[in-house]
Image 1 (spheres, rainbow, N blue to C red):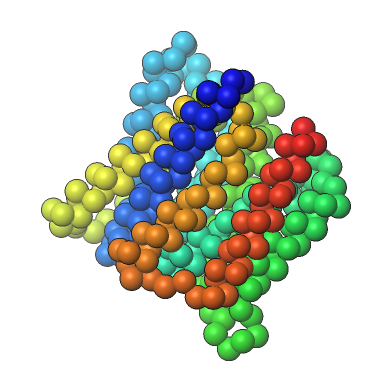
Image 2: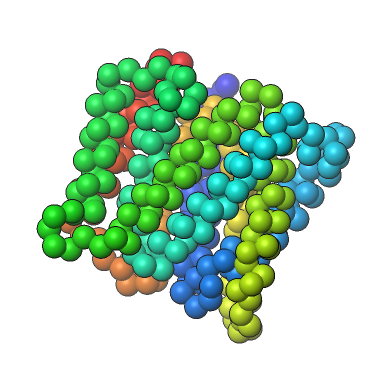
Length: 288
């Protein structure tokens, strides 16, 4: 991998995190006005169309993309991701972007912690210490025992746990399926599942909000496209630390657009989580 490709990959990751942060801001707005299931359903319709278009242009077309020896695992992955998206967006409506993303930033630590029991990977004592420090950061954000803890504060942590498990299962299915197959199953199965649920919660939308919905769909497809291109030109270990910029971008949108604030405990906890996550990624890269 050349330095030029690595630099390009880093910039692609920065662009990806910005696009996803904008997507989260739009999701927060729409989910505050309409049912979460309906919002995610429409988003997934566009996502499925995007996935199928990409698959159709590859060698073998849709049939090749759909071919898998592990359909149950691929289907479960897709259902887990779409459920995580619903949980996270619901968290936006209750906690806002700042606090939701501050807690969600713990997902790389959860991946490291679960990689042993799920994938049988070895996790050294240094990474276990980093994981512990990260979870201290989560506790600082949640503030249990200080009279201000709300059950809703655990929602983004549940989303982070679901996303971590999704990431581990994605690595597991990659032993037999390529990325195109996993991408295809993620979009199509998720779309079918959300249609089965979201159709029962349909609400009429205003003209301006249909524009926002269109923007949500476009940012979703654009973010996945730039992420794919990012991993095509650079190693994942080189660009993954920059994924934490989504916390920065999303928090900025939360403050400027939704008038959210950053409490001291949230800033401190987020700093511990991000620091521990970066250390974990560094140790994983060094071990690799």
